[in-house]
Image 1 (cartoon, rainbow, N blue to C red):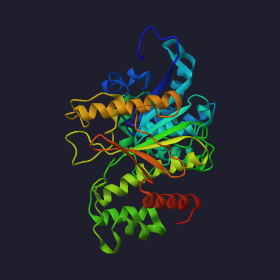
Image 2 (cartoon, helix red, strand yellow):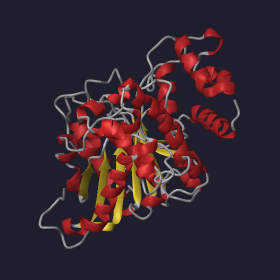
Image 3 (cartoon, rainbow, N blue to C red):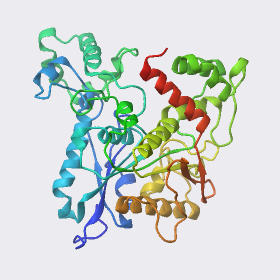
Image 4 (cartoon, rainbow, N blue to C red):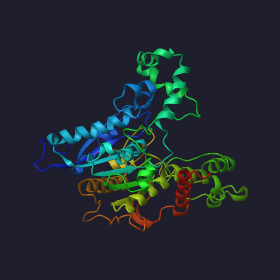
Length: 416
C-alpha cells in the first residue's frame, strides 16, 4: 500500500509487516492491517503472508536429504526472507526506498523478525526492526536433529508407509496436514522454528549476547498484561520451579509466593501468575534483547502500552491490544474491538507517527511529539498510559528481569 499514486518522486520508507498467530494461524490480508491509517503517515506498507504450521515448519530427514542446504523446516521464515528480497528488488516501482526498509511484526511475527535479525541470510535486507510483543529470546529452539526425530515419530503415528512417508504426506490435503501438529507428543518439540543449520545456525541468545546480530535500529516493546496465567498459587509455584531451578526461592520471594504466599497482585500487571508469565514470555526477553543490542552500540527505543482496549479496562492492555493503535484501524468485532473515542484516535495517531518516524530515520522523535528517550544505559522506556498520556520510566520490571537473565545464563552454562 502506498499513500499516493502515482508514486512520489522522492522514495518513501518501507515497512514490511509479519503478522502474529504462533506461526500456526493468522493472515496479513485482514482489514486490520490493510485498511488503517498507518500508510497515510508517509510510508509504503507491505504485508506478508507466509506458510504456517505443518506446511511452514515441518522438518524431516527425507526433506533434509532433498535440500541442497542439508536442512528442512523453517519454510515460513524462508517465505519472509523471500518477501524481503522481493521488496529489495521491486519496491522502488511502488515509490518505496529499497535502502530504507523496516521489518516489523507482532507476537510470532516479531519473534520471526528477530530470527531474521540473527540470520546471515537476511543481511542488508532491512535497516530497522520494530518488535511488538515478541523476542527471539524465548524458549531454546530445538535443533534440526531433534525436530527430525520428533517428526519421524509423528509421521509413524499417522500410519504412513515407512518407505514412502513424504509421498504419503504430499498426497494429503492442506486441511489434513494442518491438524497433524495437534497429534504430536506434548513432550516433543513443537512444529515451529528450529536451528536448521541454514537460516538459523546458532542460538539467538548466543548471537545477541555476543553482539553479532544485524546492526539494525531497534524499536521494541510490550503491553502491560500480554497473556496471563490463571491458576492457584501452587500451580504458579510449580511452573516457576520448573523454569528457574536453583533460583526458584528468589523468584518465589519476588512474586509473593514464598512460604506458601498467595502471590502479589499489581494494579497494572495483574496477579502473580499474570506477572510471571508475561515477564517470562514477553517483558524480560524484550528488555534483555534491548540491553544486549544497546551493548553492541546500536540504537534502541523501548515502549510499554498500558492503554487497554476501551471496554476491556478490567483486563488491562492484553496481548494484541497495540494493533489498532499501530495501524489506525479500529475493529467493531473480535477480541480487540471496542468503543473507541477521541482519546484512542489521538493515541493511535501519536503511535503511528512514532512508528513512521522510526521507519524513516531510525528515531521515533520529531517536533511536536513528547520526547522518546533512547534506551541506553539507563534502560529508559516510554509509557503509553491508560488516559492517553505519555510518560517515561527506567528499568522496566528490573528485579524480575535480572532474575530472568540469571536463568538464561544458568541455562546456557548448563547449571541445573
